[in-house]
Length: 287
Image 1 (cartoon, rainbow, N blue to C red):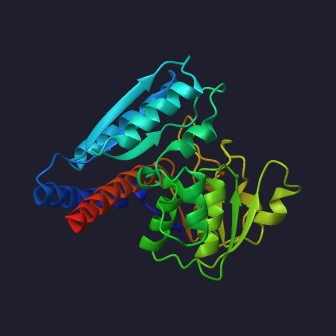
Image 2: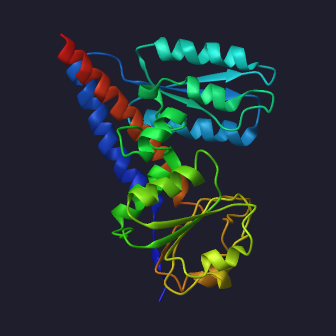
Image 3: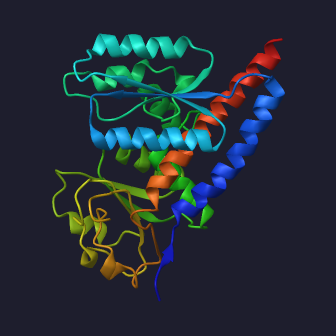
């Protein structure tokens, strides 16, 4: 019997429908224009441009506004910081997204950390990561936060599970491991220097693949009944896991595409709406 499909596309549509109502209520209550998500794209990476466009489309579907900012490949760190500073000061902008990756000559971490905490709706700042790790209020990194939402929605009990995360990027693998740990899983975080990777995957109840290599994780490395969350996406609809032989052996899995990707965007938009709602509430209390 095939495993349960963790359908991120279907869940994202439900989330968007709820967000559309929340945005309408917010606009009606404040009498102001809809909240704005500002997206910054540096350079001409076509994949990044596509992702930014998809996020802008999602904003419009829920009644928000998108403000795309495109900067040249030659943009310096200081110029990018100045752009972020201006968005931090803009009261209409409730969320700021700096599309990863930026050109190599830019100090990406410095630019991420310049984003105001209350507008860090993509969960990329060091401050936000630290607060999330300590279970304090903060916007979680959008992809792992979306994965956690997906697991909760489908009734996947994380507490007590053995979870292995493959990949330790600052915006996916590391926050994913911390969120699973905060949900009381026992977590192993693997990376390029991990020796004998299959050994760490063999007994895992949950595997999160976030390494960016098509079908690198082999089906026979994973046990029967595993829950597979594949955050990879490659040409031909491939993920980071060799999924076809696993479909009839796993308990649940995310499809590629249609699993993790839609939840990333839905989470980003939801956290922008939350930011706008909190700003409106703070303004009301100040009056």
